[in-house]
Image 1: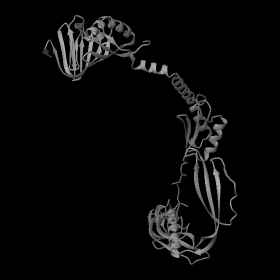
Image 2 (image 1 turned 90 degrees about the vertical axis):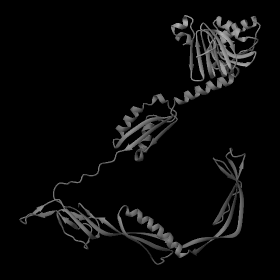
Image 3 (image 1 turned 90 degrees about the horizontal axis):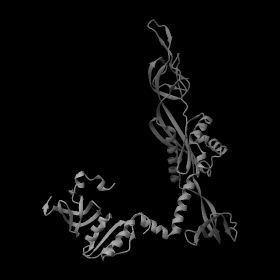
Image 4 (image 1 turned 60 degrees about the horizontal axis):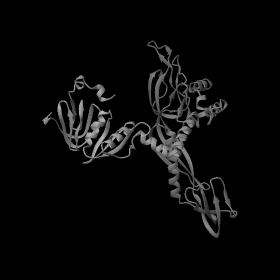
Amino acid sequence: MKMSEIAPPEVGKGAARIIWTGREEVVIEGHNGLFSYETKCIRIRSKSGLVTVSGQDLIIDHLGVQDLLIHGKVEDVAVDGETT
Amino acid sequence: MKGTGQVQFRVKGLGVEKLLNAARKQGISFSRVKREKSRSLLLRCSSKDYEAFSELAKEKGFEVSEAQPVGVLRLEKQAGKRIGLLIGGLAAIGLLIWALGYVWEVRVENAGAYLGEVRSYLEEQGIRPGIRRASVSLSDLRDKLEWRLPKVKWVRTEWQGVSLVVRLEEGVPPPEAVSNEGAGDVVAASDGIIRRVTTYAGTPLVKAGDFVKAGQTLIRGEERDKDGAARPVQARGEALARQWVSVQVRTPVTGFVSEPTGRETTRRVIETPVFTWAREDAPDYLTSEKSREAVPIGGAWWPVGLLRETYAEVSLRKESRDLEEAKREGAKAAIFALNQALMNDETVDKWINFSMIEGDTITVTATAEIIRDIGCRP
């Protein structure tokens, strides 16, 4: 089952849903594409704004049409510069 | 790339993120996207999407490396290159499955006196190594063996890998019922000197210090009423008596000493697990001492050896042993035999006696004084 199949209704309306689990995993559902990718910072476009995931050794474990899974030592997640 | 599964490749170019977004719009998903250098990414996608992605990348001026299969696809590709290994592996698995369908060992455990009978029954039924496992019904075999061996308490039949194991548990016959009904005496089971008699029912006929012989009545099955009339009862009680148990062993006081005569013969022998061959016969010395020196031929894994046998002729001379050493040896053996005979009796004392030298031996007698309940039902 894809993550998009289990995404909540608000995802279909364009709102991004960000799930930050522990310090190692961030899931972004309903994204609009990758803006930039570096091992210390990943920026993702979404209708809610630009989502910035900062940390160390970041990799994109899954880049799907609607969902995105980031692994690594996640230190911060921010939307348009506003820390979540 | 044929088949399904994931492939891994490298994309080089400026702004690879834009390429990924364009691919995403075409419905292509990626996994394990990892930044290698500022202008290159290592990533994976489905093998069926790779062609489309590759076309798109070329169209947009990006460089895409050749796809390397990963996971199951990689195994498939490797197996395709090593067709012999694949066939061999499959053949080995097939052979193993085939072999597991047969009985390779029939083991009978704990059968005791019934071992021969069980084996002959299995043979009659054709249950032997090499038969098909499916042709053996464990429950049928168990039932038939239990019916055939009524004295056996139970039979267990089971598979242990490719072995058929038949395990028997012999029944223990119940002790003979001792009748507690009717009058009866307590008599001495063996000779002894009475130390104490404890009477629970009946009339004691012996007292401490009496010497009694086997079969003598110790407690009579009779009691007297208040009016003096005799009434038969079942005598019960304990009669502890002193007894002496002795065992004897004989130990030699002479031994043979060998002396080389100076004659010596050496021969070479080839030894295999199946046969032994020597060019020369062994010398016909009346008595000799043989020493062997083994030289392996062809290393440790080849079970053929060359032996160098040396026969030294010796003459035997009878010589007296050290008497004290012979006595010590005899005493040790006698005490061991005595302990075996005593079982759990209460021991008061133990001692050893040595006889004079008779012929070439001395007799060692170990004796123990014990306390034992000698009362029993006749």
